[in-house]
Image 1 (tube, one colour):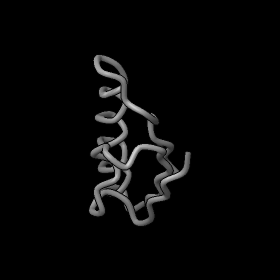
Image 2 (image 1 turned 90 degrees about the vertical axis):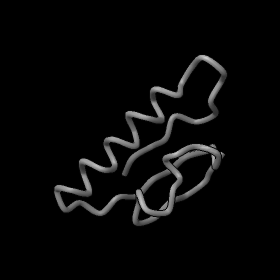
Image 3 (image 1 turned 135 degrees about the horizontal axis):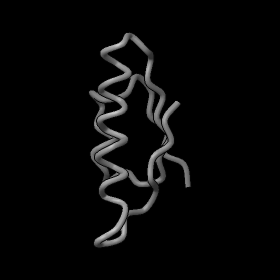
Image 4 (image 1 turned 120 degrees about the vertical axis):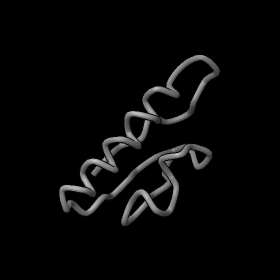
Length: 58
């Protein structure tokens, strides 16, 4: 399970979104099933192709 960075403030947290996206890709290449929990639907991490299951929770 990967927990997203949450709300992104201008100048902050976008690097967490990028690193989380890279973690999803790396784990998927290793054969893991990816479950993503994030509170911000506007991030790249919530792309349907990155995770097997995505939960948007506050």
